[in-house]
Image 1 (tube, rainbow, N blue to C red):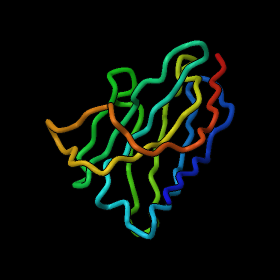
Image 2 (tube, rainbow, N blue to C red; image 1 turned 90 degrees about the horizontal axis):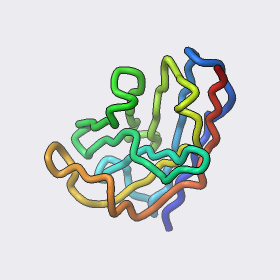
Image 3 (cartoon, helix red, strand yellow; image 1 turned 30 degrees about the vertical axis):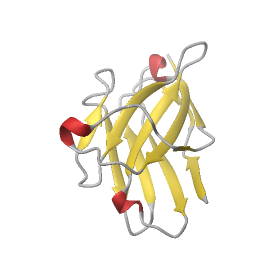
Length: 127
């Protein structure tokens, strides 16, 4: 049974920072062999990919967050992180973590076909 639990969301002013965490329980397996990502769904809009990290720790970012957000993971703690700096009002959304067990390093990265999702955590950025 797979369970993903996000935390760390909240309300901040523009220019502020937040760090999201995603604690993963994957049937006793380590996240080290999983492809993981952060997604978000702004109010009234469709869900979009934000950042991804492959088994080898290679990373991918949406253009809108490059240079401001950093994805990382702690395999020993089975936890995924998203450090968000210089937040903007347009970053306001529900943020979700997701996993899939396919090779996704480098050119193999894809924002689709993630198998398991967390319940989401709200991030609100005020101007």
